[in-house]
Amino acid sequence: MMNQSLKLFTVATLAGALAACGGSGSSSDDTGSTGTVSFDVTDAPAMEFSNVTVSFTGISLKPQNGEWVEFSFDTPKTWNLLDLQGGMSEPLITDEEVPAGPYSELRLLVDTTELASFVTLKDQPDVKKSLAVPSGEQSGLKLKGEFLVAADTTTDFTIDFDVKKSIVNPQGQSLADYLLKPSLRLVSNLEVGSISGEVDYATINQARNSDETQANCTEGYEGSAYVYQGADVIPTDLNVNNEEGNPLMVVPVSLKDGDSLYSYKAAFLTEGEYTISYSCQVDDNEIDDEIEFDGTQNVTVEAGIETEAQTIPLVN
Image 1 (tube, one colour):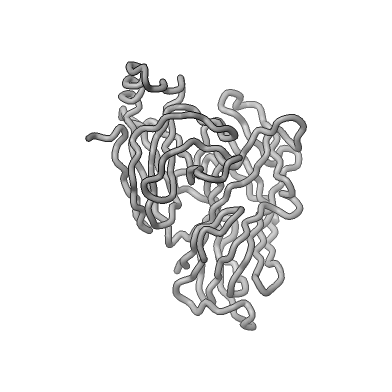
Image 2: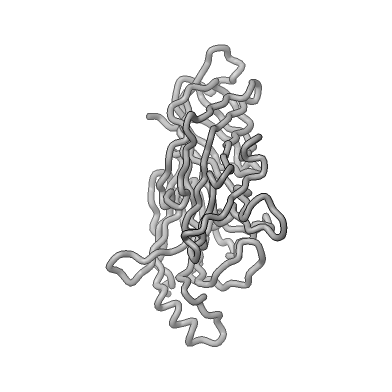
């Protein structure tokens, strides 16, 4: 199956023009010209949740010069997004024929009725918390920005939900216990690579406990790798209410079987330069936290390749 080139875009802004390789790249004004598309869904990991279940009921695509192309699912496609991490994904639609040409928007329809979509917390794994999506059932989760479906070929896309950025705990009266205000990325499977690495948490924890000038690691928390787009980025905490300076994703580390090192994998990254850093202090995603970082380094991502970062703490 031939994939097409697609640049990353977010809910709010287009990060780059989307271009297809191969095929004619003709406009949807060309009568009878079609291409096929596949859309998968994946998730960047979260820390405080044990389950983030979202029930998708359909997907719609908007050609720039045409009417919405809608796909309604006979049966909702429901997944715990936390199962879709480290490069795992599930298909929303596969090899569906659509008009060729430029598109301006994509929408995902979500069912939030009667806990069809819900979250559970790690410290309350048996208690389902309601999850609401503003306009999720009517107009859907919107991803605005141009992308191109080339004629006579197939384009494979992956939609990345970042739960850490997307789910907020509203204050006061709200539609539900938690709100899904998605931070979504759309990438071409042909253009993405990944970064993997290891963290010596025990060494970092001991060093911080013995140094009064450093903040201690948060008790019961082994930390996360922070991924920033671009080289030589000064790492900062995540605050969904502040659009500037946020990491692209925050990936919790996990203990490898039979090993003393913790590992992480940041997947579905478009080609380019990234800054990686690590913090063992808990980060509230709705406020500015003065957390400290270890092991900041630059990493280059290439399509189709899993790039290994240096082990943290860095060795001089």
